[in-house]
Length: 407
Image (tube, rainbow, N blue to C red):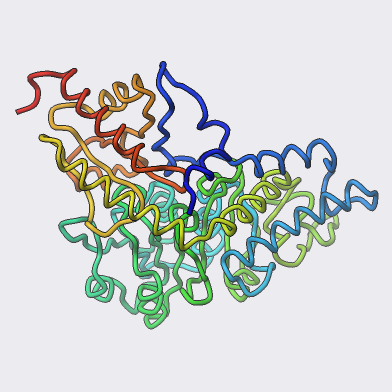
């Protein structure tokens, strides 16, 4: 894997920030985009721009072919059984809310249970809080180990015959922990529950096979996997999706409209009301092409090597706390003692180093960690060990800047 050759395909990385070469370590928030993705979106707007499914003219046909072609690319990328199981959404948040609204609120009742973890992103907590309030179902949390991971023993003891919905992340956006989804799905199904996987941090980095995982729903976003913003995917097993009602109503998703009643299109279009995110879907298709060309196994191996290297180098800094397990995906979350992470990130930015600081949309996890916020460096296929060396150098300068706050 030629990382330097890959990096050269991302124009934004070839710039200086505050007089220093940019080191971008914030891909868990959003990834950068290669030329091929940018050009795919640009080409659509320059040559093929038209609404899809509605016209018989040439531009409409070309736009539709590219849009549905992107759906087929997604299907292959996650090994879904049919494009009917691939729904384009605005992103992971919209995908999870679709399931919480259309499936959970119409299925759950008082006495039922929803099981999640305290490590979840807000987008995989709040929809289930609202579903629980609306239906009278109980919301339960799988206990955490000291490093923030969960054990299958605790999964088994938390999921009961009353559990109807399980929702967990594939990869934590804070700790980098990787959940054993296939095992969790098996336990959920043994108890008669369905499982949704928040794959926002999974699909960009790990080869996803929804058939092998046997998950009922899988949600992810394009912008975290070198694709455009504003496009995401909800995978759902066809038998479940067939029995779910749309959550948005209007054009595109209808079959027949009468004065007092209407019927819906077949899957997946009944969940895609209005003009869809055409350019975004085409860009996502180009992003999938890019990732497959590099190789998903190569990407994961590279990121884990970077994470291991980063952990080793960061531990040479006195007064640093690193959160999460030893075995992790490509990110490291940390704090410098007596320095607020926002201050850390600000000083790093003055040296052209971009990291994320805050609660990372994971306030319940921050409470469990007994901190208000953390700093996070996240890596992707275009990062190098030299980037991590720059990070360490920047953190040492941050310590120097804040002086006697370090013991």
